[in-house]
Length: 376
Image 1 (tube, one colour):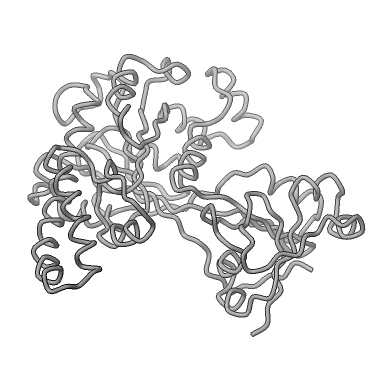
Image 2 (cartoon, rainbow, N blue to C red):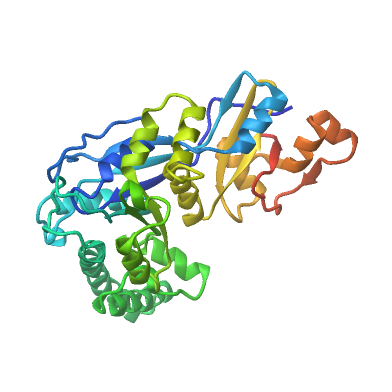
């Protein structure tokens, strides 16, 4: 019943890992990805952005595969980009500034790694460990670049707004709001916009500090479970931001990545006083950051997870599999995950009326098992 296709337009979420040189970005990237960035004790060891693909862990996918025993099991994925280390003056082209800023503009969210550990053997680019200062350095560079973008656009939009263009007038007002907060040393994401139309206009500006951000505090092994004075300082510094924070020990994650079996990894975590790997927690946090959810298709041929944005309606969710599914959408047959697991098959769900027939206005829910009927 569950149609599969080799031609699909899967949702490629891309997160950029940023931070000052030598904070543990490349080590974390290595743990997250099957790719391997060069990790060395000197600035700019990551020159070109390394792109890796993370498999998103989801116990529900495993459970469905056990029920249907398909030929293939395909999890959803996230792209991670390891971007070159940033230094003061990047917005003016210092170091690899322009390249860094161009690479980060192409990402959907920012994973900002902060060094929260002492180690005399790992050089800090500014000579001492101070994650709040490090955060401010990068924030300032991104804000300065955004201010440059905003001021440039204001000059162009102003004339159109004065000529009576209503959209230009709306954009002009948004740009002025951004200019005011950026000049105060705040990020664009602190501006609260009134409606979806304004949000759409703002998104087209692709401002660097308007992107969702996840702060990852890279700590030593002893601080992995509880944090330390540095993580407490970061927590206080981001209290007013719309941001998430995670405590991860990249060195522990590197050790876990070398282990071959789930049993070994679980034993290692327990010995470190942890219940879940930092990688797993980071992926879940990235999902939360971008308001993402998962639906499934399953059957004898394939059990597969698909990523969608919360609030997506059925035709658009179908379009994630294939554009024809959206274009010729007729209806969706939906089984709730808990019903599928409890009853053990699509046939059993159908027999007891647990398959809902939904139309174009149905908002897909996290965990839905979907079958789309279409005609092109």
